[in-house]
Image (cartoon, rainbow, N blue to C red; front, side):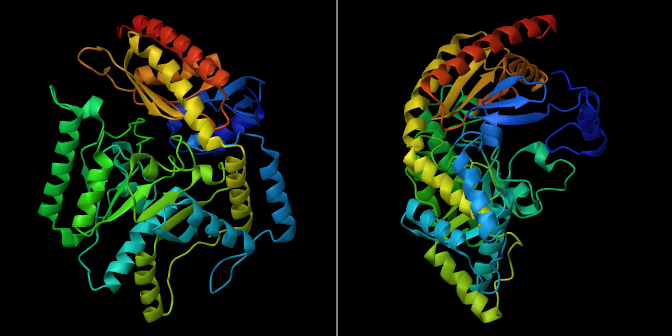
Length: 460
C-alpha cells in the first residue's frame, strides 16, 4: 500500500498511536485515509474504491451511507443530544432499545445494561458476577473459563478473557483468574485420526476436568463467541455448544455468549447462540447493534442475575458501576433504527441466502495450492493459508504471507483482515449475490498473486 503524500498523512504519523498497529512501521508506511463510504464500498482520499470486506471491524450491517441512521442521529441530537442514566434518570431511546433487545433475544434474557463497547461490556460482566456472588455468600466463585484464540476485548478484565498472546504480552495480562481451554477448531487442533465427534467429546471432557481441578464453587462463568471470529473465523465442532451448556448447568456456572460479532444476523440467524442451539445466561452485543455508526454495547441477562445484583444494590444503597455515556440517547436512537432496518430489509435472511453463495464461491478456492481450509457461516468466512496442504503445515514465520495477501487485497480493491495467515471476510449484511461472487473472484486473484510473491520470497 502506498501512503498518501499530503499534510493529513504527515499529521497522523506525527501525532497518532494506532490500535493493533506496529507503530514504527506506521511511521514509515503512513495511513490509508478513508474518506467516504457508499453501500459496501469505501473510498480513500485518492479516490480508490474498495469493497469493505470486513464491514469496518466486523460491524457495519446496513452499509456505509444509510440515511435513516443519519436522520435518527440528527433528530435525537435536536431533541436531547445527551443525558445520563444514573440515579433513576432515563430517556425514551434507551428504554425502547432495551425493550427491543429483550424481545429479540432468548426468553430467559429479560434485563439490559448499556455500555459504549464490547470490551466495556465484558469487563462489566466480570464485575456483575463478582458483585452477585459476593452478595450470595459465594466469595470464592470468581474465576472464569474462556478459550485459547477467543476474543472478548482489550480492557484489563476483558483482555484477560481474550485468549490471544499479543493481547497479553507486556500488558501483564491475564490480570483476573481465568483458565483458557483448548481452541474448538477441529482443522487445527483435532488429532490425527480423530473424528469431529471425538474432538468435541475430548473438549467437553477437558472442560469437566478443569472444573474438577479448579472447583465448581470457584468458577463464576464460561465465556465464548458462538463462532470465534477475531481469532481466525472458527465455527465450533458439531455438538460443542449444547455440551458446554449442559456442563455449565450441572456445575452452576453462568454461560456467557459473546455475540459482539455474531449477533444481529451475521451467521444467517439472529444470534450465534440460537444458531448453534444453546441458551446463555448472559448475552453481550455491540458492533452490528448500531452498525458501528455510534459506539454502543448492550448486555442482556437473566432475571436471576438481575435479582442478585438488585438485592445487593439495595443493601449497599447503589450499584456502583456505570459510564457517563451508558445508554447514550443518540447511540440508542441509532441502534433502534438500525434494528428496524435489519428487520424491514430482512438482512438476517439475506445473510443466510447470500451467505450460501459466498461460502459456495469461496469453497471453490479450497483447491488452491496455498489454501489449507475454507471455513465460515453466513456472511463470515476465513481462508487459512498453509505451506503444505497435506500436513496442514503453517508458514514460518506465521503472518508474513497473510500480511502480503492483505496488502495485495488492498491493491485489488478488497479490504479484508489478516489473522496470522488466515484471510478473514465479514462483509456488510446488505451484500448481494453478485457482490459475493465479485469478492470470491478478487480473492482468487489475491491468492494467485500471493503465491507468486511467496515464490519470489523463497517461501514456496
